[in-house]
Length: 227
Image (cartoon, rainbow, N blue to C red; front, side, top):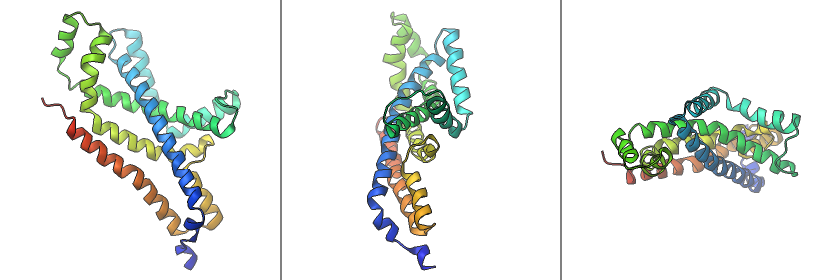
């Protein structure tokens, strides 16, 4: 019973735990940035006047949103990296890191796209029509008129997607990359399933996600668009 409440593993492995959470932060930030870029491209495709681009964007979003993230990561790590020998770095941990990033960002981009598309629906249609009337191209009106307002409308949903991405990093162990959840599993194997280990990692994830939620909530109110 005493071993169940033993805090010594947290003390002994504190440096390893911090390294694991730093890996989680690196995954989240890089994947979030790439997902934002790819999601913006996808939403431009989905509202494009070109049927082929609309179909391609719709196909991508529908496939990725309805595919388990575990399968996406397994495809990247086992299918593309191990089987097809497509490497992104000669260093094995770095290679698996980038494949994990690509898998997470490709999956998350579909949700970013749909959030932005919902934000674009809040922009009055007359503004886009006025932009085209003064000679702006589709991409110019999208970049200068529609997307800036869409981003301001969906700051809170984008924050929720970032929080979900942070929690989704817990399964990148299937892609061969070691982050916080993989460190927790290793500690369970080494020290047994003690309650302090579980609580320590739970608090660690709360430290990452709660401030993110508060920040995006504050930012959404600060940049809210008056209608």
